[in-house]
Amino acid sequence: MGKKMHCSHCKTTIGPFLKYAKNKYGEQYYYCRECQKERTREYGKTKNGRKNKLKATIKYNKKNPSKVNAWKRKYYYVKTGKIIPADNCEVCGVKIKTETHHLEYKSPANILWVCRACHKNIHKTKTSRKR
Ligand SMILES: [Zn+2]
Ligand SMILES: [Zn+2]
Ligand SMILES: [Zn+2]
Image (cartoon, rainbow, N blue to C red; front, side, top):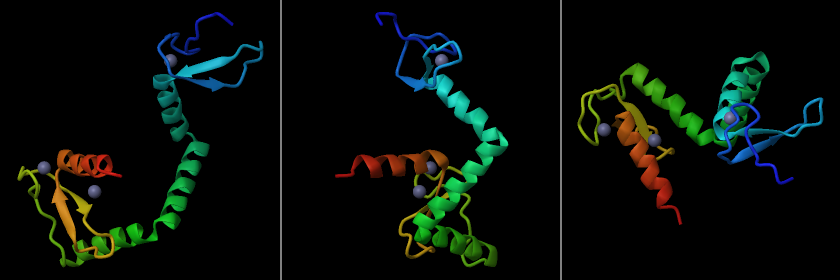
C-alpha cells in the first residue's frame, strides 16, 4: 500500500485501472483503459475471442428478435427493389454511402437513410433524452 497504482503494461499512472489476476510472483496486475481496449481487441482476433463474439451476437439476436427481423426484412426489401437505398443523407443531404436508421422496428420500411455522422447524432440525442 502507499505505492502509486500504475498500469502493468504501459506504466501509466492515469486511471481508471482494471484489476487483473496476480502473476506468478504474487504481484497484483492492473491495466489502464487503453491497454484493456488493446487486450480485448487482441482477444477478439483469437479463436476463443471470435467464438465468444459470435455467442454474444446470437444472444443479442435472441434478445432483440424484432430488431433482427427488421434488418432481415430491410435487406430483403432492398434486394427485391421495394426499398431503394438513397445515395444522399436524408438529414444533412450530403452525397455519401448511407446507412439506415430504423424509425420503428415494427415497420421495416420506415427507415431513414443517413450518413454515418448524422446517424451517430440521432442515437446520441436519443439516448441523452432518456428519462
Ligand atoms: Zn496501460
Ligand atoms: Zn448526414
Ligand atoms: Zn439508427
